[in-house]
Figure 1: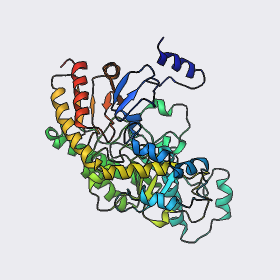
Figure 2 (figure 1 turned 45 degrees about the vertical axis):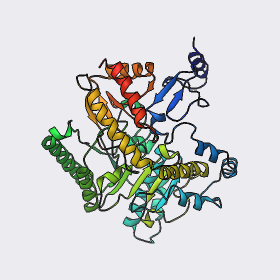
Figure 3 (figure 1 turned 90 degrees about the horizontal axis):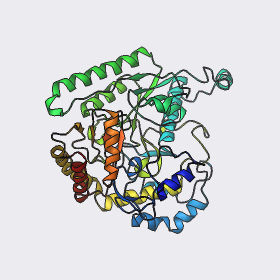
Length: 446
């Protein structure tokens, strides 16, 4: 039995390891390479499910991790809502806020991607209720009593709209908007919230312009009609720029522009879930920048590659009208915000947004050649950095491919029913693209 198998067996007695690929030696892992317990080295194009920005053991991250600033943040982890640290404003301004999407200048920090989405939901619900109640109007006695029984009017029957095949997290509210795989939702009680179709585009895009345009218009019409059917109960909708866990499903900038126009017309708030697409990997710092919206989203949530989490916003009325309403013990984590600041500064210093765009264009061109005459279909993600995906004919075929790629020294992941997704670090270079394509050629017998 290998060291990896032994450790998985022992760890499995106290921790569920059934989803584990292998046990990692993070002390030996470096830049784009992940090393397992047996010493095998893998080119990692999955990057901890899209959450490693600068590769493994980046020297700037190691440096800040060893700093006095980090030590104080770690050993005195503050309850930020009540006892914010003296340097938290500066940490945010130099990092998370410096990276804010266009038009959004405020942030609420949270604990994970799921939590970022759920706190955005709460902000939307509380804002909606405050608008309906009237500015400065206090809660009624009936509202305060009924909410303790989980009943209206204190707990109104408002909802969040999401899209079929979307993924927004695994907590109760976020899970109710998640529509990607049954295994995520089985046995868990859910809010009876609505969903609407997300476009199913045909590839290559230039050969199916008419069909794809008709599909997007069909989905937009249904989106609008669902909002009307719920008669003012839909407070907000949440959408990913690229549906990631659900299969790397894309839509055009036109589709998202129309979503925003409809949401403004019908007074429904727009939450853009950039937990997986954010922080440069699509060739823009935020993937929704590709849409060129004339009015920014109401909320943009983030996590993963920033190693911190939260949501951006602009409207000061999205802050609840009383303290302790949007709240938990920590309200984020200064140590993670310090890491996010370091990641942002390194991205700026090394021009990694533009570099990943260039590498993505190079890689996409090579993949088009590699996949000719193979079972691979629906290559997608052109012009979206290294946020690239493709499909096989079945889940079994896809899963066998993933295993063979690991046997050829590449750690790669799937998504949806039968898709493969690339989630490289931001320091992925053309030489790594060449190594990846060589492995693909061997596995696909090109």
